[in-house]
Amino acid sequence: MIEANMAFSKDYCDFQSSRSLLRRVIRRVYINGIAKVVRGDAIDFGCGVGVFLKKLSKKSIGLEVNSCAVDFCNKQGLTVSHYNPVDDNYSLGNIRANQYGTFLMIHVLEHISGSREVMEKIMGTCARLGIRRLIFVVPCFKGFLSDKTHCEFIDLDFFRSFDSTYGYKISEKRYFPFNNSRIGRYFKYNELWAIYDRKMEEQRVVD
Image (cartoon, rainbow, N blue to C red; front, side):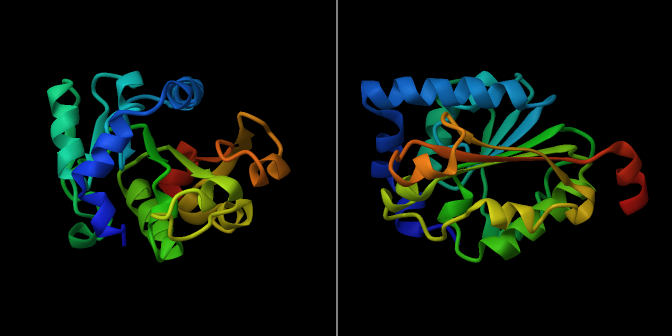
């Protein structure tokens, strides 16, 4: 479960929307990199203040637990809804099948305890909804230690253990911006990306 004291905090929303110049520059590099691997309209799960959502197609949507962040995004003209993953059990019950091509979870999974169970639920839901690409981004070790709201450290072995789950196969895995796992022990802004794709033939078999 996401840490409630931070997830619904106005202070945390303000922190996200008022980054330093250096962090904004670094963030822009990450944003542009992620945008290049999105396919079609997307669901940005845990979209925060919408920094990634702004780069996606106009039909893309955001889901966010922080009410302050939802208000902030809506004032920016972004389509963001308040979402309670505990009540909905990660089923995305209000979303129709075959609407979206990509599911994004950027710097969210490390904030959730029981991440393995949540990952399984998300992949099952995305398969049911016909979403063909899943993108997960988590911090490397130094970045994980830098934020007290992080609950569980997610590494490459975690993502590999879900390869072929519900027909999703890892199509790309990398560290960004430096594609080296060791750098993440010293540079807190290095990230791990895991991208899964599900082919239409597999979708027909599994569904």
